[in-house]
Image 1: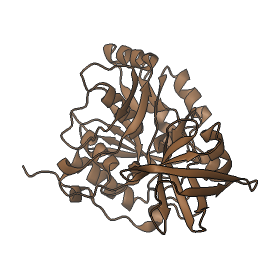
Image 2: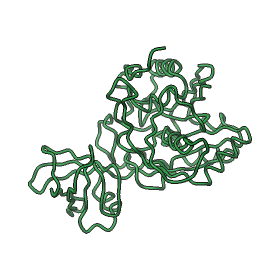
Image 3: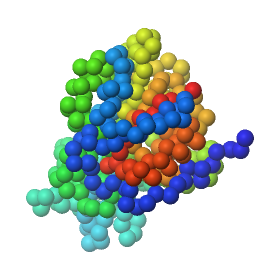
Image 4: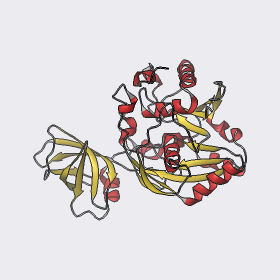
Length: 349
């Protein structure tokens, strides 16, 4: 059997199928139900999801909150600069991707104005691989600063500038813990009514936090998957969620991860065999051949070609099954990527 390569995850997508705006209402999108065991798939609506779950099943959601991570400003010398915060380190320091005409050196002063015209100054402390460490002078709370001066970090394939609609809809209704620079997009489909319906049906809702990084949008740039270096993301898994998952598995119920982020956190926390609560950083790269330990079902959106997210979905459902499902979705004019439609995937044995 030949080795799986990055080019195996390429596909052609008509540009008009890339959703530029969310559906008129949360939960109004479509749902492609793919059974990894049989390869069969069915066209449904997202609102059908509660009917596809049984009492005692566990739904694991990522409660990370997207921060206004994109900053537009200038150097003290006058040149324009754009910073995309990747991670908040403490109350005044962040790691960020910085775009400027010339690479800023340590000691460079960057200035970002907020909506009130106040200038927020940051000093470049140094560089760590592709990220720059920035320190905001006299800053008591960098999250509050970003809320004032930053913009919603929409993905690069969404062409319009972020507006007030994006501020609401590029955020899950259950977002609590600030720190993500990209939304856990499978969760964007849920509204309060759907969550209430699931609870009434006896489905257990459990939460974890994984702060999604900008690396989630980066394609794999090497052909040999063994050479790919996965970006790191922080996660926190509460003991309450571990207990809910373990109880469901003991009772023969199913664990459904909402999004690849929830799945990566759960599988990372079980790398030693037993699911363990705690805070950690994961660089887990899930590709075909991976043996899943925790998750039985995955709710996810349609992913970019050559992306680690598409590789994860293919590992979960089988490469051939996912290829056929994606061809069907394109033919049936499903909406793709962050603001697009969803898939419910049953794991391939």
